[in-house]
Image 1 (tube, rainbow, N blue to C red):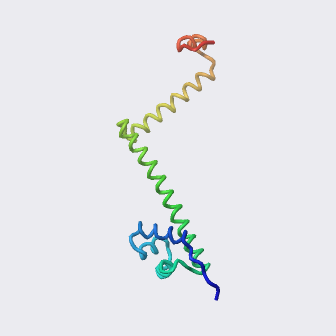
Image 2: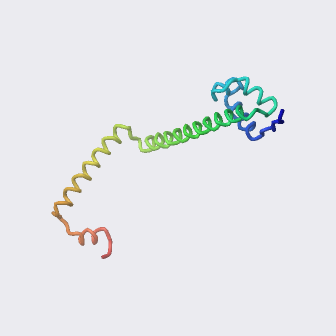
Image 3: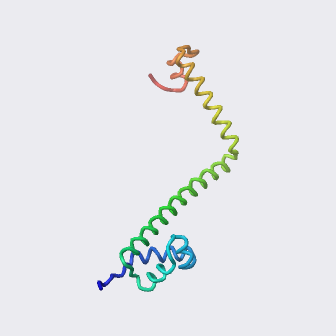
Amino acid sequence: MPKIECDKPLQVRLDQVIRNAGSPTAAAKLLGLERTMIWRFLKTGRAISKNREALSAALDAHEAQHKENATIQAKNATNESFLQLANLSLEDLQRMRAFFQSMIAVLDCYEKSGLFLVSKSEVSTNVGIEK
């Protein structure tokens, strides 16, 4: 029977998930694996290639999900802090967006019509832009 080497990197990753989950049984549920597989791997750090691959795939999927959740939480926290800072409700932002979209549509139509109340050179002078 071939000797199976200890997989330290995989063991470190599994230990981290177990610490976060609270127990090997909770980690097994979280990863969707049998708890006996987790316990056996913890004991020796060794597993046959099929089990090692299953464990590695489950850890990869868990880490990817964890990263995605962290990104979503960061975005939500940023959005919430902006709204608190600006003291605006979501409804206020939606109304503002609709208003500005309407204004852009009006300006686009006005520009296409070719009618200008102020010449472009006057606008440049008024805002301090040199020709």
